[in-house]
Image (cartoon, rainbow, N blue to C red):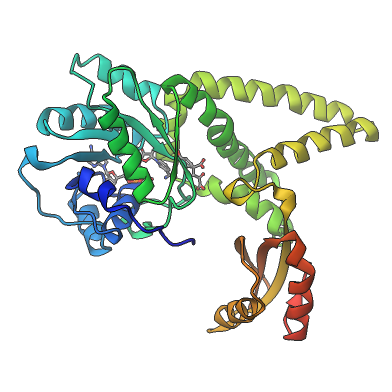
Amino acid sequence: MTPLPPADPRDIASLEPVLIVGTGLIGASIGCALTSQGVEVHLWDLDPANAMVAAGRGAGMLSQLDPGDYRLVVVATPPGAVAATVAERLRWHPSAVVTDTASVKSAVLSALRETELDLSRYVGSHPMSGTQYTGPLTAVPELFVDRTWVVTPRHENSAESVERVRRLARLCGARTVSLDTREHDTAVAEVSHLPQLMSILTAANLRHAQRSHLPLAGGGIRDVTRIAQSQTGMWRQILTANRPAVREQLSQVREDLDTLIGVLDNPDELESFLAMGRAGARSLGGKHGKEMSETTTVVVEIPDQPGALARLFADIDRLGVNIEDLSVEHDQARDAGFLSIEVDRTRADDLRAWMREHHWGLRS
Ligand SMILES: NC(=O)c1ccc[n+]([C@@H]2O[C@H](COP(=O)([O-])OP(=O)(O)OC[C@H]3O[C@@H](n4cnc5c(N)ncnc54)[C@H](O)[C@@H]3O)[C@@H](O)[C@H]2O)c1
Ligand SMILES: O=C(O)C(=O)C[C@]1(C(=O)O)C=C[C@@H](O)C=C1
């Protein structure tokens, strides 16, 4: 993963000490990112074992300060517990800006409005990065580097409160985008919640497959089903909270499915449909906003042996080619893996030639 960028000392001074409430994957990852930038972080979790593990991983301290001392409180509990926790923390920490990381924002805001609390110190946010795993043991300090972190400011927030949350995102290496609460929920239905359901649909459909067919599974189905392994309890809360927008997305897909089934007998119309898929994938862009077409994937076979990856990276380093992105897939039958290395299109042929010269097996 890309390392955290150097911190601006003014960003640190303006938000510490920080309290993280809910120290699972996201809370502990934020804690690890902040402490590695030199920020003072304190941790609290309903499950003391999770707070202890997070502290052990370097996400912050278990000791608690005087409640009035915190400048920023980050609530990273499961979505269903966010509104009550934010309300509680607004009451307990009068000098703190309180933010949350919940994947759906309107439901949290509506529940908070029912409390009649002054919400000017609450600024919603949502880091657009995660994994299929859960809990502090899976925390990664670099999780948010180069990712988008949505901030959902409202008229009642002061500029300083909003800026404190933007600084949090910057210290974690993310770039911020400001969105209205409702627009956020529509956007995540499109780019996060529907993809999650498509992954689940594909994985769930495997229940109809013959067991003897499963070893044929290659990279394609593994790419598509990674996120289907996510925690069902968390996604139940996310999808329930955003159900109007998710229902709209699913209805669109239902129409597309009918169209797709209809064009299977018409190769030209089928190809036009496939082209919409290519265009959609390309519209997402590549790393750092680069066009996807600017990079090419080179697939190298690596033996499953200690030091193999280090040797490979050292060889690539000697050629001076930058690795834009990478992923690894394991061969199910042999002790080998396939490393997909994304490099600048203009350097791909150089890299292939260099790899062959250094006796690496190429797959593409
Ligand atoms: N997992 C992702 O990919 C991802 C990405 C971005 C945002 N989010 C959002 O971040 C939040 C946390 O997700 P996660 O993946 O870290 O979950 P997680 O299950 O890994 O961690 C949640 C933590 O909150 C604790 N907790 C539960 N109820 C609590 C309460 N009332 N008070 C204090 N602590 C409590 C749990 O013990 C656990 O340690 C969720 O709101 C989720 O929507 C998740
Ligand atoms: O990479 C993943 O595991 C994710 O799917 C993370 C992902 C996403 O859809 O991008 C999932 C839900 C969160 O609200 C934010 C991030």
